[in-house]
Length: 290
Ligand code: SAM
Image 1 (cartoon, protein in one colour):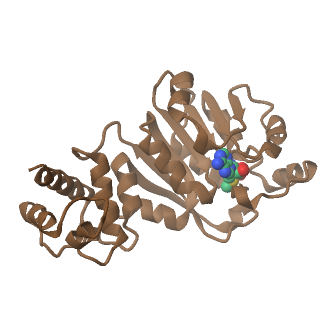
Image 2 (image 1 turned 90 degrees about the horizontal axis):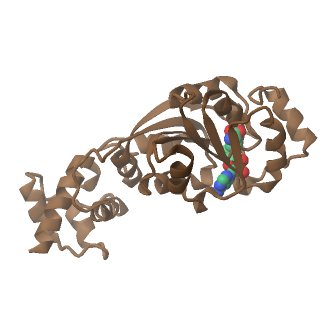
Image 3 (image 1 turned 90 degrees about the vertical axis):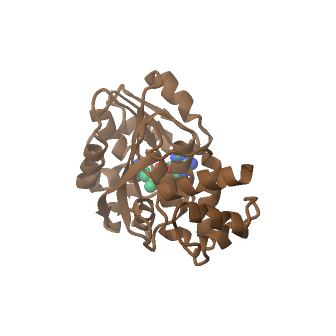
């Protein structure tokens, strides 16, 4: 089967199977061999790897993954694409196509059964309507992971990589950076896809930490604080916390934690680093236990 990274081969398959792009599934197929090479190289895929691909579409990236990995599992929600994948991946005996919704799958179980519980790699040109739930779902479920290398909307990639004090910095940046080091690998214009999306895209690589990079007593509590800070971005951290019903802390307790850290009581959450959020949540947690 010829490479689907070449547009005319993709067009031939689309015609043969009379494929109508399903907007509800975020179907924008990649048609650029350079971008595909960049994703495979960035993910560092070798013959030792088990790779989970989310949304193979007609199998364009899957072909590249099969060429380089030991084993590939490709999870596709659209049942109409399953016969197409049987043809486009017919040359490979190291791929399993699963017709399911990735959000309903137990990825820990897949890593255990297919890779003996060792770290897996995840690669995808993600459907943009579920980017955040897919990435956060995988990270939060503590699946053993080496890296996640994915195409996402450019603005989302920028938010994942952003640091304190920038306009893109927020709860998503902190959540992603708690579990991984994020690096934008390439910006990808709309003409690399068929059909063209209305937004620009970027490939981002998340190199996953084997253990968290900061010391937190209660992860859930820290993320409540982070969410409260960014829900009311222009408010001070202590006001954000006092106004949030899910955190049982008042302004004075938040102020005391800030004093202990040597920070101003009027500081906004948006300038705190992940390490500072961790320290703040540990101190505030101790104050609340008194
Ligand atoms: N990987 C292909 C490529 O690069 O050309 C297709 C990428 S397209 C942006 C996203 C793919 O994800 C589509 O094939 C779509 O049907 C599939 N998809 C959408 N939602 C999904 C879900 N919840 N679970 C699994 N696959 C999904």
